[in-house]
Image 1 (tube, rainbow, N blue to C red):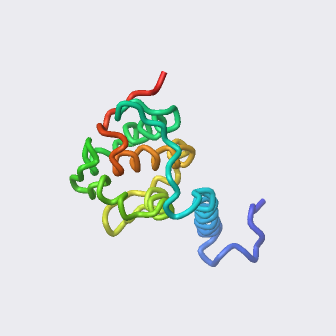
Image 2 (cartoon, rainbow, N blue to C red; image 1 turned 120 degrees about the horizontal axis):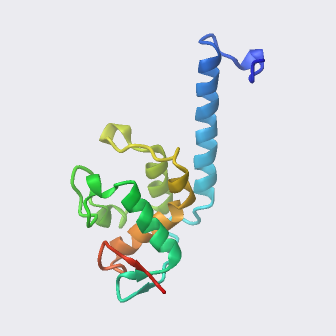
Image 3 (cartoon, rainbow, N blue to C red; image 1 turned 180 degrees about the horizontal axis):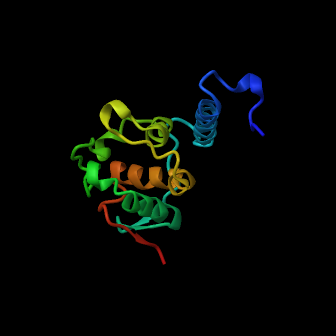
Length: 148
């Protein structure tokens, strides 16, 4: 049985219908995450002590940074390598622009999309809080530790 009504299956067949459905789903997920992101320059809810000890959510963002090897392109200190320096980029990007870039990528600039990864979508606000804290200077070193 076809999961799509016959009128929604394009001439390319069921696989083309699945691709179109997946694109619509991805767009809806991105829109939902962007809607929950708050205002364009909403301050992250990060607690930072001594410049490197952070709350649990911000530490979760740091772990996403590490596990997805973002430093491979953006540098271990977010200083930029083949990708831009995020300590500078996050001074001008809104939270919505940051989320859109991470989830959808920027293929023309070789930035992959991470919207398919639950570990990223679940902690996108935490990742933003970690990187925004680095950009704003509240987090003074790239390697952070969780608050007790």
